[in-house]
Image (tube, rainbow, N blue to C red; front, side, top):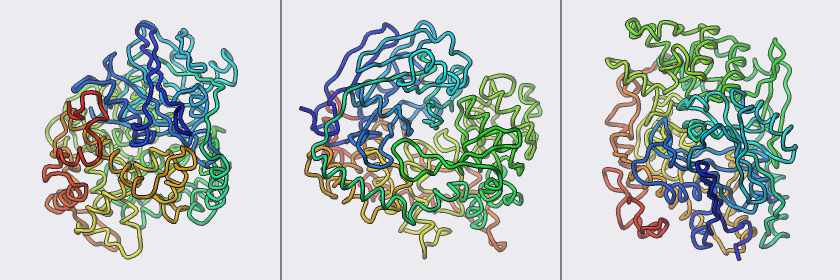
Length: 610
């Protein structure tokens, strides 16, 4: 019998030959990694071999659920998508909220593993745990939303769809997978699905998941729902994450014109407050009480969902202060199915290269616009999403373009491990700088809450001091806990003690007697398992760094102060971070750590590095 909250199985589908099988998931494994990114990472290691190509037919893509999916706990209707990233060649795990999570759980499985490559464009249909392939010829070229609408006409509204847009079809290295206007956005997971010639996945099920203690789960859910409407989530309900733009600008931490500055003179014109002057509505993810989603209507009548990361990346980062143009650019990214952060970061990098004359001898890139050219940005995004013109280069991301250009271009490319930086200026937020440098996913603000340390009262965010390594390590562990349960990170302010309260929820759902100590250990185990995957794929500590300009060029901070982050300072923080996790000075996971965290037998051959 599976523990409460689980079905105890994973469905494995080879879309190349159409074969399927159902693998049992042992309760002892589930208890050690829970679900979400933990379960997804373990299944990725189980179904892949070292050094495999991310877009090869045999490369797996995993859709992993958690025991909380389908419970009344707010924000729990989430799932993880895990694969080897074609953007970074390292692990990529992305989360999405959608009815897809609930229907996939009702299929009687805890995870779906897709391998192989179909001969023709196909739709993978999973109904009550039984999989089949249908033709997707009529879906090719459509946006994810357009494909979703057509699948609903074909199969009925009970089926939930998650799939790719044109960018995934063209194997853009930062293509997304989307459904119900939610995105598994970073790292090019859409290209992985596209390489399998799978336009999308449609799921429907009827199998409920039992709860070990339904009454206790309901009581916890009522309490959490009440707290989710408190001051800890007020920002998200009132203005949404777009309120961050002016805050970051005041702190000198708003990346501007490809990280050449930390504040933007046009910030007021593209701020969250400016957006809210437009007609807007607030929406909720399924099974969520917070309602953080804000949808704005442009002058052209288009409804656009906007978050801070898209606002920064398509606005200040590209030197654009036209509110409607930024909304149009975000909508275009959604239609194409490309990650707004990588799209904006790659575009901004190309814009600076143009202004420095680095593209003068590259005929394919003569149509790259300059900073501030809003129509030019829209043309460039369209080219990226379809690999036309300059997009044939830029669709591979800033690192690949920089390597092709050579010269000073690599020092300007805004990435870590190949993934473009999110909307936090590292020189002005130095715990965040550390979190970005060491993240297994590449430049990332979701697998680490390191920025919280920079923003808390009394913190010295401009100094690379000894407190930042342990703080970044601890934030990774907490994030891994939330991403394996899975609960939305916007809830973090609603918890008094995440580990104790998360343990109580997990215990009520599963019937296990989990406490805060065990849950912290689970988080540490998941962080380490992701690190071991990257080690297996060739990671070295040389990858744990930041773009050269951030370590060589000072930044003009608020009040005219000069802000710097030195290589030596970052190196000291990284060493402190490694020590906090119990790793070696070179950042490798020692054998004793593998043993202590019960990791050795989480893969079939007993060695996570094999």
